Image 1 (tube, one colour):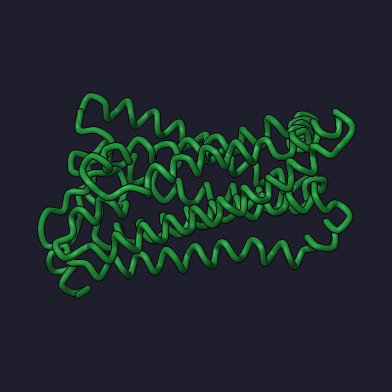
Image 2: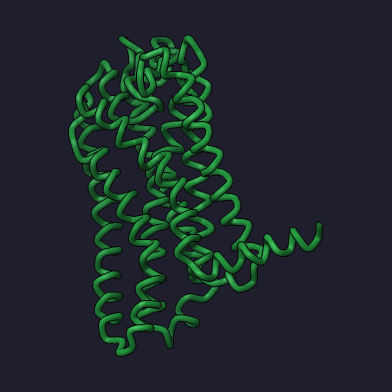
Length: 312
């Protein structure tokens, strides 16, 4: 079946966000700026966490991996998209399309389970502060970080193999700006019922499971915070959770809109707008959310700036 796919379709054409030629240069500049901000923000966050000893805690360890995953999955899509903005023929090879498809699924799943791990970390820090040091040891943190990567890439490989079972013998025009599963399913010549079912069940189960863990964690967290007598103590506890809750709301809200509906031409068009938020906006905002609302990160930034000025 795989050989048949290669002989029938050797490349796909990505329609992108719009077919209006006059908007292509404008969109190129906009998304290039967004990408540069995303790369700068996430690389800076990773650098700060690794270089400042005060940030060598489980919370910032998980945050550095969230920044890394955000950086990877936006990089998986953006360069090809930018090239297509300035190209007359917006093509991607068959192999390149499925490589992009695999890494996108893998990194998105890794991303929202990383957010789940971060919620569990906040639960342990606020609800069980006396046990936090022992329960969140370096070995435990490494296992908690490794699990999303392993599960995410295993899920991505499974979805990719299922997609490769399909036959692509007709049109090769993908109505999207990257190789996403709903638009690819629309192009398949063979029966897609099993793939659609697997997509809905997999996406629904992963989103529901991870979000349930986050919600349960925050129920316990808010209960514990309300028991704190001092207003200052409650404010400080809430401040450690606010950034994470904001990131979760943006990321999960758009993913639910993207995947929990049947693939069709209308849903694909709507999916383009939704995809912009979780591929570009969310990774760009996360470093800003976590830095602007976090005293430790702002302190680390001031130290780096002062060090650079002192050296000069």
